Length: 153
Figure 1 (spheres, helix red, strand yellow):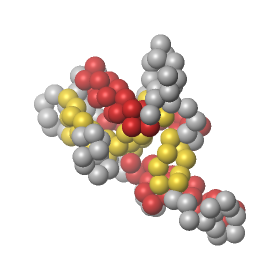
Figure 2 (spheres, helix red, strand yellow):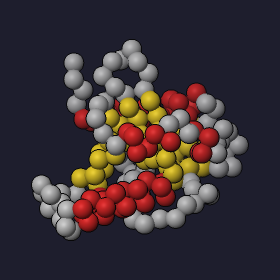
Figure 3 (cartoon, helix red, strand yellow):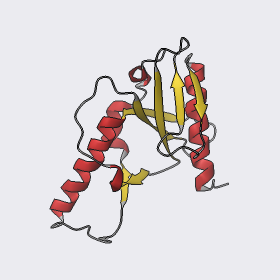
């Protein structure tokens, strides 16, 4: 049975919240009720809280918008993260997680989008009005299972 897009998204949020709890943190989901934040998570002592944007896929690439991109410098004190989740199509295989600092993700979106625009003479090739941005798994490979970055365990 093929999942509907909202089911894929909700599954990803629940998998991330469950993984945070499993690792010893607290987490609360917002299920689309708060712009750009799907989960708030904290350490047990509630000394550090982070916000998480979850992007989930079952195949291919994760999806976002070029509007989210902006040039950013490294921020070692980041409290905003994206967790990319691959739930796959086989329910017997556990999901994969990529924990990415928001500064890196926003900079990546900005840089890749502008590289593509330059390559194609300043406009998108197929649809100049498109705001779609695909997050390609190989471009985020270094962030696989980087739960330590959250600083809440």
